[in-house]
Amino acid sequence: KQEVTQIPAALSVPEGENLVLNCSFTDSAIYNLQWFRQDPGKGLTSLLLIQSSQREQTSGRLNASLDKSSGRSTLYIAASQPGDSATYLCAVRFHPGTYKYIFGTGTRLKVLA
Amino acid sequence: EPEVTQTPSHQVTQMGQEVILRCVPISNHLYFYWYRQILGQKVEFLVSFYNNEISEKSEIFDDQFSVERPDGSNFTLKIRSTKLEDSAMYFCASSDTRGLYEQYFGPGTRLTVT
Image 1: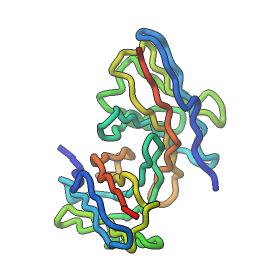
Image 2: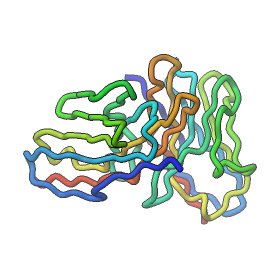
Image 3: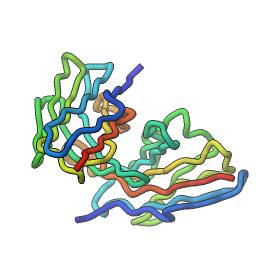
Image 4: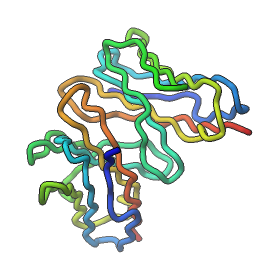
């Protein structure tokens, strides 16, 4: 069964800290992986999409890496700010014949001022 | 920047009633999706739609659910006879047919079934 897991479930850090969020998936033959941010009661904002042939993608203070062989992706947030507080979701598209994403449960991040 | 929009933002309905959730995808996108998120749970895929037909659906998407693109801009999800367990946030998403089909999500419709 194709599953996506995110740990930790919640994380609280002081402002300015660099942090890493983890995503693991059961099938290494993924097509692509997308990281989203979700604010309470709101929709999903796309942060980064990383395709299976890539090892990493960067956008501003965010860097997503992908290691298919170990079934893992990480989202690195540099110099965290209180405005980064949100739930971060990892979603995997497992093969090109499907367009659906399978989501992880998310990591709820709180950055303390 | 183009975005996916959804209406209403919150819908309250009684059990057994029909509801229609509406979405306006990004204008040049051709793939459309519905997902739902029950409070405190994962976002779950319901259905994908392309070229005026369902391309994929999950086990959740049973005969109570239907989707339609009634005109060139709207994409709708109909729940024929709502149940208490249909209470959730429903997200519409769209993607284009180039590149990696990155999905862009709308703000969601919170459906409360009483």
